[in-house]
Length: 403
Image (cartoon, rainbow, N blue to C red; front, side, top):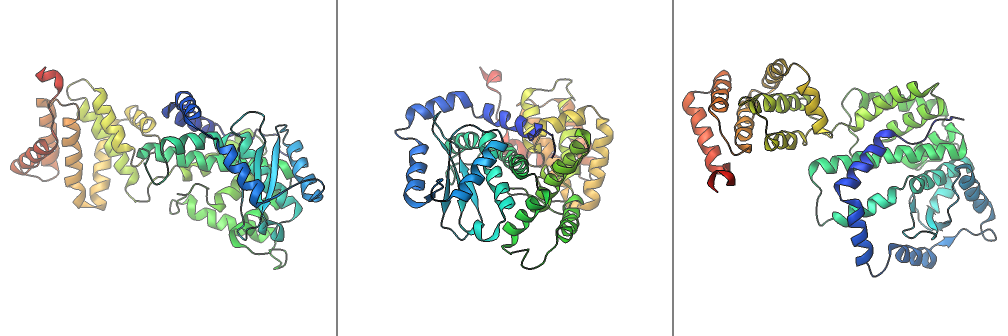
């Protein structure tokens, strides 16, 4: 069995970024003080009242399985296991809010009709992995600050939360593998939950499943498929657990995971996403630098626009800044207009908006705008009219200039 650490560095990094962005320590203290009751009470009442608790004397075989999984994962905190009568193939875990209170792991009854013992070990290990990885605590904080169906996080934060959720699932999958040590059972568990089929009864071989997964993964690797859900798509999950179980060394594991994570990093599915990102960054740097001084507001404006296309917009901007910016700018414009000539108005509007973002419009910036517009085929009067409309609609003088 693999000796690799089940954690994923990027997942840890994102978790800390999200926690810090939401002022975790302060908000958690306020939340704890403001609550009359805890989520523990809600979940405990629900599980005790409507589900079957896994006790040694009632469900001895599954009880022993759960305890064995806990021991294999080295998890000593108290956990109450439950079974819910539900036809959906699902399981979930709820981490206790208060220290010393048991965590909760629930497995729906439908899982027992389809899963082997090793597949159930994977499922239970996966759910315990979420508790060990402290995923529930971060989710509670996010849902408190941004209640579902009430408020929406900023787009960059949305992307980071989604990526963190996806990586957290891959981490939990690793714990599931450590709980059973049977790679084939992990793979068949994925396909059973995806299809609802009894694969053994239908004589589906593991080799056929892995071959099918490689074919489906190739679709995502070639840039066509997206993984836009809280859980990564199954081809990624299967390949990720296969890498974790069979990689010869850390380097092989990291390189393989980097390919998979690059799929998860994709935000859009447009053929011009990369060129548009490069244009926004390079054009922004050029315009902001025309007066030899890049302001925080200009950088913020560039990053805000990049955030619609990149999960790590600041990192992307820094990478562009270290490259040949004028060359990247020229190439990105050519690539964009060769695919969609109608984009020229949008490119010009972005630069005009950027010029006004720091509430100061310099002669050098104006000169660059007119030169760029001329190269796009606009007349001087057309550029002036567009600029005038933009100023009238968006420009707000700096308070410093009128104080």
